[in-house]
Image (cartoon, rainbow, N blue to C red; front, side, top):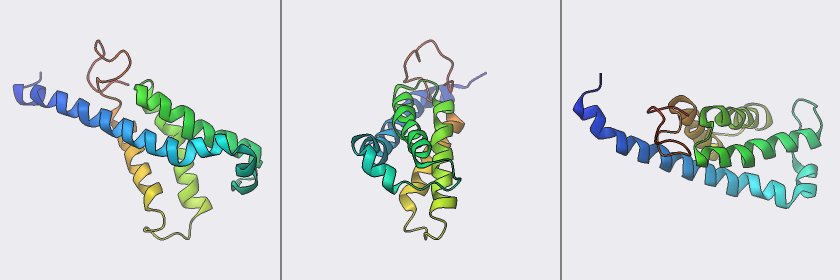
Length: 139
């Protein structure tokens, strides 16, 4: 049973989750995802392959995590699930590709990790595709 004070916070929480989804996803898409699509051939020569899976496979996985998943998150569709590939790519980047980076050098990656881990824990909120009928916190 919810008390009146928790119900009065729901619109602000939904607005906050929408803002977090929108801004975090747009940053990831703009800074990392779209450049990989628009400069695919060049990115193939620059992308790291820390597990020996091949640069083409690594780049396709990065594009999925940095383009497809942010679009799903903006819409609030399968938000928790869509956060998982992003979290995985960020952890690989921060722990395996750039392990020597200081916090200052890796701050963008760590902040994105905070944003998408938070969304994986909270879900999309009610401001999402099909969100009006959904229970609070679903998605």
